[in-house]
Image 1 (cartoon, rainbow, N blue to C red):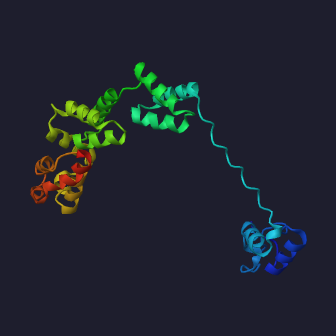
Image 2: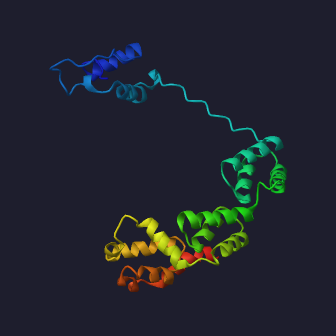
Image 3: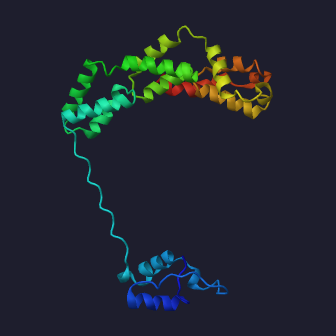
Amino acid sequence: MPCSSGSLGSLRRTWVRTGSLPPLRSPGPGRNKTTVDHLPCRFLLTVLSLTQYPERCQCMPPRPRKSPPKPYDAARLWTYALNALGRRALSEGEIRIRLARRAASPADVDAVIARLSEYGYLDDRRFAEQFTLSRIENQSFGSRRVVRDLRARRVPPPTAAEAVRQAYQDRDEDLLIEQFIERRFRKVDLSAYLADPSHLASAYRKLLMAGFGGAASIRVLRRFTQRADDLDPACQMEEDGPAAG
């Protein structure tokens, strides 16, 4: 709402005398649109209190800062771990980081991890196998992408590599590429879409990012456009580098 004062000077005098702004009222017809009447009171209050008369500032007191949560003892840490695993499947590396942030003692973290593993609640091999199958069935990703994703989920590299090897050993990469293309480009005419070199290059990058090899990607794209022969199969080395380390 606008202020009722007719000038900034009178507004300041009122502020100095009373420590507050005049009452608010809506401007009547024919009032000068350039006066202070139409300036928001919140803006004027801020300007006056912070620049002209800081001693008159009536700002709200700062919010008290929340105290950091108390570290978890072994019993509470165990309950937290069960709840976390109940909400989402986690690798040992992921749950260990979460526990370490909350534990009162590092020894409690190791004890909880050991207990989770003993009861079968935590198993990186099983996690990697289920994760890999999910990426294949739900997203049609290639093996290189799944390896990268597993490492991002803090699965040990040997465990990730073995899970991916077993899941992909009997799968046709060309078929997976076709399924991936159908998922990503199901609403377009691929032959017409890929005739544009920029669209073709974008589709090729998507296949590389999805974890497929450059040669296999070009082989499948060639079914839709002969321009696929202009693509460089060596580009896959840029995508494979991080996962192969």
